[in-house]
View 1 (cartoon, one colour):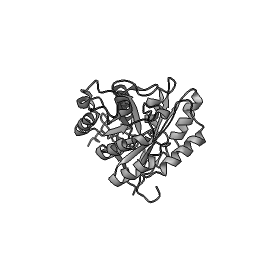
View 2 (tube, rainbow, N blue to C red; view 1 turned 45 degrees about the vertical axis):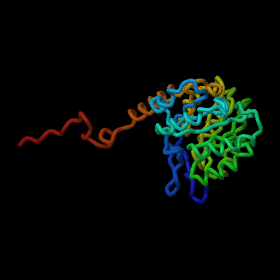
View 3 (cartoon, one colour; view 1 turned 120 degrees about the vertical axis):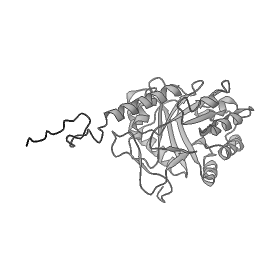
View 4 (cartoon, rainbow, N blue to C red; view 1 turned 180 degrees about the horizontal axis):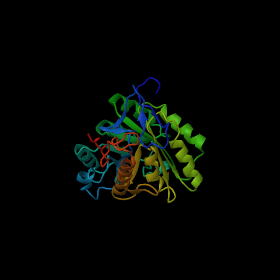
Length: 289
C-alpha cells in the first residue's frame, strides 16, 4: 500500500531466498510469526482423529497450523478447543472454511459462512478466504479493525492461468487492506511451473504465497519457498490438496537447504580479501634479528 501501512516485498536479486522489506514499512505477521522474510511452514489439520497434534505441532516444525474446518466440520464440537490449544502452545492458527467451488467441502451458500468466519477472525490469528467470495471485503474490514492479517486466496483446480492473468489477480488482492495473497493452481506442464515461478519472482508489494498443485506441481512445494514464497503448506494428518506433502518433510527439507546455504556462505574471517585472519591461516614469520 502506498500509505506505508503495509510491508513492501521486493526480489531484486532473484538468487537470494530471503525477502527484504523496505525501510519504514510495517512487517506482516500472523499472530507473533513474521511473514515474508523466510518461508513459514503451515501444517494442515483436516481431522480431529489425532488430538496429540495439539502438543506436537511445534515439534513437527510447523510455524503455523491451518484448521480445515470444512473437512473437520464447522458445526462439530471440539475444533475450537483444539485450535485454542494450538494457539496456547504458541503456534498461530489459520481457520479455513473452504468453499466447494474452490476445492473445499462447504456446499451451503457463501454468505452462510459469515458468522462462523467472523467468529474465527475474532478468536484466532488468521482466516483464509477466497478472493471470489462476497465475504472477502467484510472479513478484511473486521481483520483490519482487529489488527490482524487475512489470507486471500485464489485456486484453479483445472489449469494455471497465463502470467498476465495471475499478476492481475495478485494486484486485485493487494488492493484489499491487510490481505496476504495466496495463489494455487493446477500444474500440467513445465510452462505452468515457469509461469508460477515468474509470478513469484516479479516485484510484489507484499509477501506472496504461490503453490503448484497436482503430481507435477509437488516439487514446487519445496522449490517455491526457496525462491521466496512466504508460506509452505503440508499436511499433518491427511492431504488437503492434490500433491500436498507431509508438513514434517517440508520443514526438514527447508531446514536442510538453509543449513547448506549457510555452510556455503563465506564466513567473515575466512572470506577472500582478508589475509591471514582465518582459522588455520599461516602466521607471518618473525624476521630474525
